[in-house]
Length: 228
Image 1 (cartoon, rainbow, N blue to C red):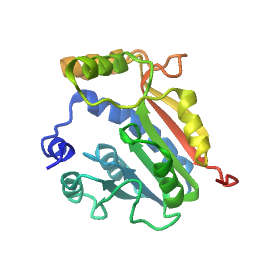
Image 2: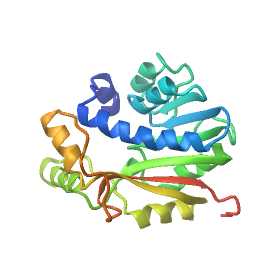
Image 3: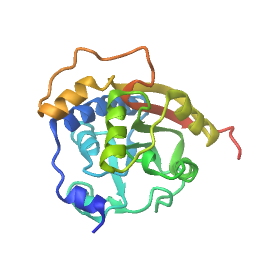
């Protein structure tokens, strides 16, 4: 059993995780509202599928699919999403231009490089669809905490992104930015929830410093004029 299988087998959603998922859900709901008619939605690296469950329970216009490399995650996801499948995000079993909305959170920072992943997302995303990606921000207190764990406790090191760096990666791989969104400014509020296992409505919701959030999110569309 891989470390990811072990993680999802014993996973319990903390209040901090539930809160950040609620913030992602607002972004995803807004993106779904921009797309017409019934939407085919795919979560890449679904894990516990916390956000996909929110979409399923709140939307009648979304047909939900899930993908993860962990058989344990998919076994659990299949209880609610029969179309869930075990697959690599760089080589999915889906048809060309199949999905209206594709999203991932906590996925891209684990990849060695982004080009193969984004090429596959271009292949399976409809020409007028949206790709939504949540990744760790470079300049945040939460990132500083992760770095301390890496250097002093040997934890796995993840990539992190600046706003400019993230948009550049997408632009170089055939996408154009529609919107940039930051979640949990300065990481203080999410850290308090995590440490004390509490949840509250944060008083601070934005910052002028684009990359100082716990997570940054890029909403992107295909650049249909792009060529390799």
